[in-house]
Structures are given as C-alpha cells and as structure tokens.
Length: 386
Image 1 (tube, rainbow, N blue to C red):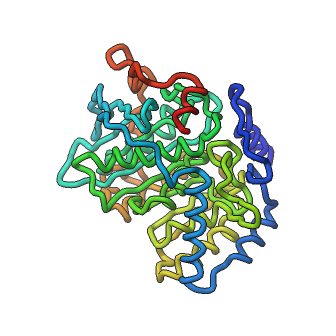
Image 2 (spheres, helix red, strand yellow; image 1 turned 90 degrees about the vertical axis):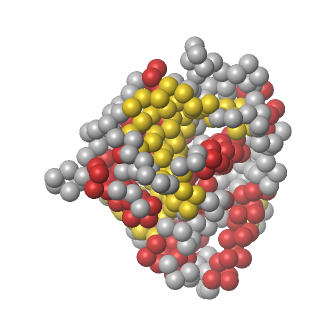
C-alpha cells in the first residue's frame, strides 16, 4: 500500500509551474473511483451482445477524440526523420532518432533493429512510464526489452515522454499533455511503419505505467496496432494520476463516464496481454478487469486472444518477470524467434542486451543539434497545440 501511495505522489508531483485549467468535475484523476466502485461500474456496463458493445465502443472512442481534440490532428510535418549514430551490438543495432510530430516539436528516441534480417520484420513500439529522475527511454527496463525484442527479430522504436530523456522542449505537465503525447504516439507509429523492412500486419505496442496508458490508448484509437501489452496500468478504478493520462476530459462528460478497462476493451478482438501486480491499482485484475475483457473478447469469438499474467508479489515496474511474460506472447502473435534468446533453462536470456550510456543514445548532439525552428519552453509548445 505504501508503494501505491508513493506512485500516486510521483504522478502528481508538480514539475514546473504549468497546470491544467479544465474544470475539476470533468476530469477523473488518479483513484477517482474506489476499488468497489470500479468493479460495480464494469459489472453495470457488461454488454449483452456484440452490437451493444460496438455501439458503446464507438461512443468511447469518439469521446476520446473530441475531448482531446484528436479529431482534428495538427498538420503533419514534411520533414524527414533523422536516424544517426548506428551501433552494432550482439544480434542487433541501435540508432538515435528524432522526428517532427507537429511543426516545431520533436519526438526523440532510439531505433533497435535485428542484424540478421530476412524479409519483412515485425515492428514494436515501446513507450515508457514515469520515473523520478526523468531518464525516459534510457532506463534499463526500456533498453533491455527493446534490445531483446530486436534480437528476436523485431524492429523496435522507444521514444521519450514529453519532458523526459531528450524531449526537453517543455515541461511534462503542460496543458494538453495528453493530446501531445497521443499525437507523438501516432507519429511514432507512422515512423515505424515508414521503415521498408517493417511488416504493417505485425505491429505491437508495449509499455508500463504511463507507457501502459499510451499502449492501450494507441491500440484503442488506431487499428494499425495489431497486438498490445499494457503493463501495470489497466484498471477499473485508477484513471492515471498525471496530466498526460487524465488531464483532459476523456473519461467523463456530464452523465457520460468510462474507465480505462473499457478503453482497453476497444482493442478487441486484437491480441492483448495484461500484466498486473499486487502492489498497485492492478491488484484486482484477475477478478475484475480481466473477466470483463474476457467477456468483451468472447463477443467476437476471441476469448483466447486476451490473457493476464498476474504477479501478486511484485511491484509497479517493467521488471524482469514482467518482461519474461511479454516475450513469449509477442513471439507467438508476431512470429518472433523466441529460441534466439533462450538459455539452457528455457528462460529468455537478456544478458547480451547491453545497456548503453545516455550520451551514446542521445538524439541531439554536436553533430545533430535541436533544429533551430523548434519551439522552446512551455508557452511556445502549448501554442503549437492550439
């Protein structure tokens, strides 16, 4: 319980002076429902048939698009992504990337590719969660999973949350952070699919915590995502404690209400793995959220396409056990080579997936500076969103 309290505190810890100005009664922040209320909400919204759910799903998706002003996306920049500083590792390569998501704002990250390429390869998007140091995609749990997936044959793109890692054009908590991060997710998907070696029919997304929110949100909004693995995030009572998750009125409008478990259900019938743990708001997943999603998937005759791995003794992260649950799921649904990373005991061996220092992975450096027309500071970036 103390860990959960710490995480909520971390989510809402002020970062700079920016603040949301939406009326509080239109937002559902953090543990907006009690656990009992969340369970009751899902029970009362259990669809009776596929047509009922499809109508409900359409209304949820429409609400997200309108509330976050995603029904009218900012103009797509004409600039080409910049990929540089290629490093050859054991079974994979790592490259540094920046790409313009809206005119004046740049997504920063790293691209991992298998060295043994034959034909079209699956693509995996790897958003990350919040961390107290602002390391973003440089964190060990991000580098390890991206490199290992590349060794299995995937082309993987990991990028920074707003205000994290190299994405320092503005503070993380600017007004409209949810809109900006969702646009960044969509542009990251565009980038991955623009690579000639990526198979558009085999694309997945997986991230933890706030990256878990980005994972199920992107899969809900864009059918180009064929497989999703949201980690330690999908809940019926917790709505995300940061403005990048619940800072816009996507969950509530007057009498209209939804929860993240319903939003995750928009992925059906595409394969989805929920990874949950005992120390946060996913503690009830085996008895609350997972049965609800099984019902949704069963309406499509696809109950076997949704799975749950629950780690009751574990904490809120994308640690080794959670990654060990994710690898075989993605291998099965994307056609990845799990045997390429297995040790003699039958477990995935992450040791060849090396950690690189931040300076080696930096999107911007002396040879590749932040473009001169980039917006700088919160007000300038917020103006781009308008």
